[in-house]
Length: 255
Image (cartoon, rainbow, N blue to C red; front, side, top):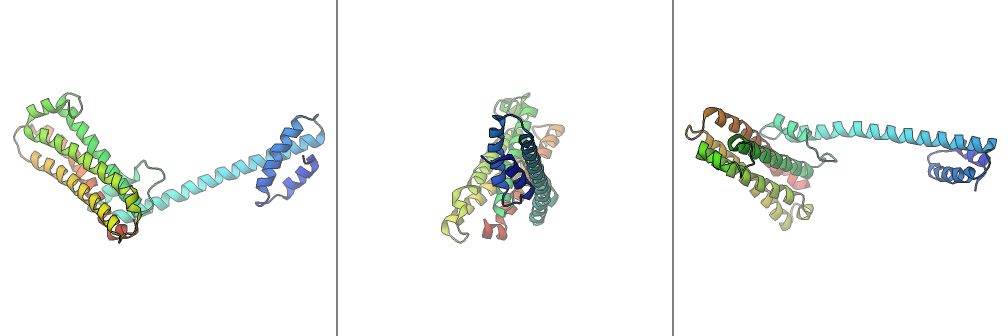
């Protein structure tokens, strides 16, 4: 076990290369010194180790803070640039900036998958909202009876949204699958990408079908129709953006 004076000398001369060794020596020495009578050298060694450990912890905390501060602007800038080519850029940025994934998306593939996940979440929330609005607080299936009483378009919209959720979940799952990790020119990659595009397009069709059904004036009052339409328009916009991110040539080349 190193003496206290040797430990103090190492602490004074420490650099980045000797830090791991020094930390190990500190730990071993503290255990050894704990068994000995408290001498001045032992106390000095403990203070040296304590100061070193505090310095290491402070440096680690500072590094993590800097890394977090530097990564967030980079991720936000990537999202903003990627959203420029979508039909609803501001909606795209807002929805993806609030995406709860960790770490944030940093590649076209990750961003497209995040957009699909956001769309699925929005579609599920809209479906639950319509079910509560028309079904006395119950979920989609439980509210179908009262939805039918309010009119066929609302009942059809519930079914459309349920289908949309399923399609978007399938698309997000396919986008994150191993089959999307190959070369963009390979037949397997193209087949998986085609599946993603098909499911996302089908989801957008479902949402637009719901909106078309609500454009009439029969079977549902104006206030209910307006409330449902507002929710579904939000879903259709994020789904349209997700499809645009999937279809981007740059994304297909780098996914």
